[in-house]
Image 1 (cartoon, helix red, strand yellow):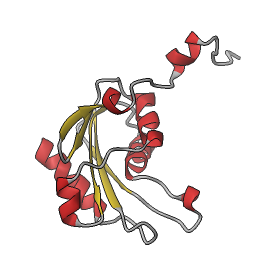
Image 2 (cartoon, rainbow, N blue to C red):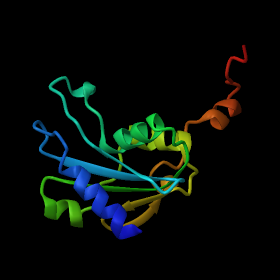
Image 3 (cartoon, one colour):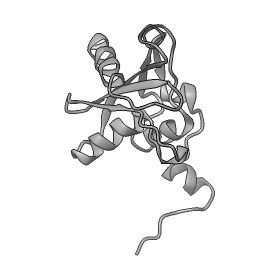
Image 4 (cartoon, rainbow, N blue to C red):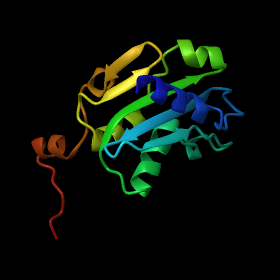
Length: 140
């Protein structure tokens, strides 16, 4: 399973659009159904309009109706060799999006092995953390 996930992330990386940074990223997200959703980073001249590979995969899964996930693989770098050898850790925004749907022990596969979501995002901003501070959803 790990090999398939890594291969899917590397294949998705090939579709990345990164003319500004030259840093190409691919992600593969396995849903609870077993289906793999892929994503790649897409840059834009207006930098904030781009999207990371990880969020691209999550949003594709959500758009397909999948809301529970088993694991995520991420491969990224300037070259194919870098993508296979150097860990590409998801950014804070991607980790926060993952925390909306995944537990702290959610596995993230990088070039150096398997990590937990909580390794990179030890304090998640989510509904339960909001309630600790007296914030809650409007129950209309």
